[in-house]
Length: 467
Image 1: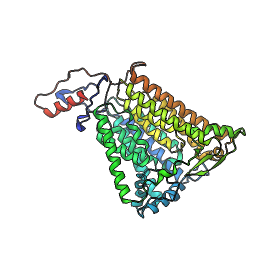
Image 2: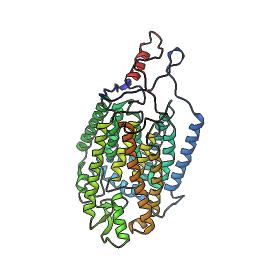
Image 3: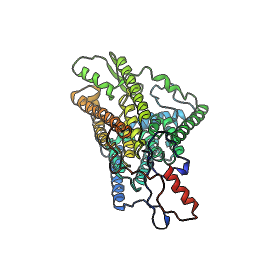
Image 4: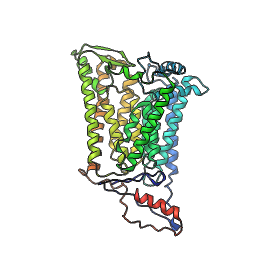
């Protein structure tokens, strides 16, 4: 079944679905043929808004040092590293001699952006984080208030972002996540706009492109994927033409080790804890990594698991027969989880990616990812416990540090397996029928009254029915 977010006719988003079973939510038309208005929930909206403000004040207290949860200063990534890159980028070249520059060319735009604001680089960066945080919150709230939708996604964003502590406003990932959240939310109604936003996000940090994995087969996929590819190619050409060294970051990937917080690092931590591994732990290519025996083998295994994971996603896409209202979002979360847990690096800020996409999933009542979202919130809290609070114990493979890190990574692994399983069962027909709160099917012929002579309204309703 295919149920979309709203009228696709505004962007030509109709779908040629082949052998997919197609279903659309019925449109209840009021007196005089007027389209229904979204259900208003002012009390819930005010509660969410007040909670968002309170939690963001908490973040500001943490990043400003008024409230400290660790002796580790996480703001130096912005004030020292990002600002240093900004100074180099201003000269029209990428930091080609800096091996810590590990980002796609679009990241240069993010590094340059705080320089346009009147405050110090650090304060300007925080302001931008707040603006993009607000943008994501507003879009989640707007979509959650629509009839048949849920405000649960707003709560995931309200709670999940501050669970990362001060780190969330001291890395640029929240900016990328906000762009990805907006792109994913508009993807079904306006596939071209959604594709452009996800393409731009992908040029800044790659992973937003994964969110296109669940677009319904047909015109939506063609339009969104083409828009993403064109936006990436265009922006990449402009950046490469205007600055030197746009692709230099690719040369630093081959010699990377295993980052100490990744799932692949857990066996090395355990071996080191019990005296069975005697390699090095050092800063390498911008992160603290394991270097030494078995690292090369484990790296190859991690890459192999990434290939297997994306092979499974391809198989799922071929086998999927029922697209529900939430399928595009659920598939995006499954793809992102596969990418995250099989990576050689799981930096703390990666969890905001998962929080953002999980929040999008929970804007739809029929999502299969509710337990997965809860597990992501648990993993986010454990992430803050291991960084910055216990990072010294992580780098030394101390028992409590290893225990917390292992719990976080196993939670992410379990969330990945559960996400993929529930996505498969909900779309291939191997599992139970969609939950009762999923949008019901639309009859083949419209049964709603339409006032004669209102051609635009007739066309709009027909576009909803056709998908």
